[in-house]
Length: 599
DNA sequence: ATCACGCGGGG
DNA sequence: GTGTACGCGTGAT
Image (cartoon, rainbow, N blue to C red; front, top):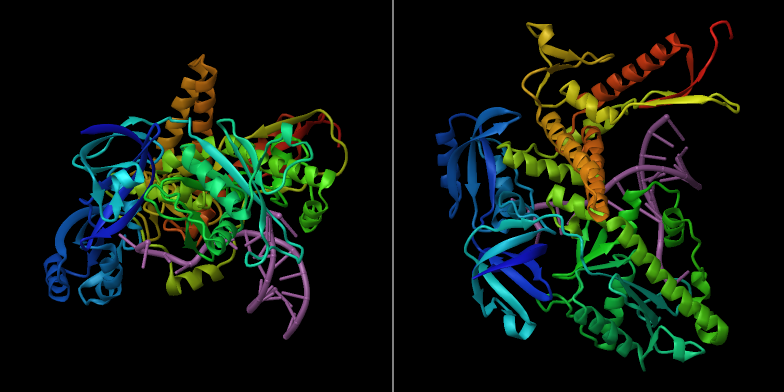
């Protein structure tokens, strides 16, 4: 059978000792899980000497692996690698150190790329796009029973093919808890949930509570008899409304953990996952991320920290910044009093609860389009992408590009290397001319368009074309000011070529945008080009952070050195025409016109 | 200066 | 889960 579905998320499970990728997808109101058991984990080994010697050594040490010689590019140079394919990602992880320690092994590569991410990249499966799935509909898989869960399970028989990639109409639901906490911060063991606010982009506006407004007739409150019923009602709302994306504000750290604790205490099942599973908390560094299989949970707090630069990121502050409107505010430590006192105060608390959850929804509607575009460009799930730093987004984009370029990706800098790098002085950054005090009138403004990306492309700044040794013909190189780092003019470096490619894509989109007469399409194209711009601008940052794969302090220094040279040169040039810069920063300056005989 | 530590958001 | 945030301000040394 074949069926067009939208890919929402991905994971893998172990079935008969084999890793099986599961793609959580939707076809309208139908939940579909696609099963693919055809993909196997692998890593690359760089041999010390003859590949055969290395292959023999690996075969002696490891059972149940496929060992083969392959030619891949390493910093653009065709290189003999050995590809080692394992039966399971965990077996790969277990044998990494052993492989690294072998005498014929110089280096291991691509050993730390999560299995599901490798799957998406290598199979060109892009989350939040519509694809055609060809396979066999099966009644059950592992502990999944299709009828029982009300889903369809399709075992894939052919590679997925893209149908549509600019989908926008996802069903978004926001939620927010209010808690009765008279003794400081809420404690889930003692403090009950008193309200659950829900709002959606398909018209839902509701607060579930055990109390009601003074005038229940014209009320948005859904009154229930207990906290337990409150949670059950919330679960039903999620189940019944075919939700694609659930959003909250700080919901990774507060709402979902709290909800899960209370549900456990009250004996409520939170089995809202497409596979019948409950909310799970995935460790990400020191923080947890709340995950529901088949429903994408986006914590907007994390998104907003990347989306805009503010001194604080409270819901109120972010909302004010985005919409210029003050929200209703109830101080957290007084919520319990409003609840207990009832009357007008309780009415206000209900209004506050609804206001919060509606604000959260509005923020989602404002910011998710960009993140959907980034998801499709980067090629990793929205759940992951919304929790990545921009540098990580750029890195996973590059990992994908590297695969299709036949490049083996560099390892993350680490270990002893890391300490040395960290000790290095900070990169100088852009040129800043402190603004002159006073009120300036009749200023002219000058700035470079995407200065750093342009420099990376025009000077071919890339770790794979940097030359540290003596060179024969200096004319074959771009020489960075101040530091004299040498970059080959040919061939084009990996990162410059990737940036050139996406900026070209951006150019095409902007042209389409201008030509388009459809407002919705225009808007969507605009978001696409913004997403690309963000990614291109982040590439510079990739060079400057010591824990990224393409870290290169030399490249980072060369970019800013050229940047300073360009801006200073422009200021000087402007002076020749009688313009005097009163303030400059990195890629632009403000100047005023002065007559030649004036001071 | 340098370092270790802890915080953010949420109620 | 082929894993272990991050960047900044504070107060102590």
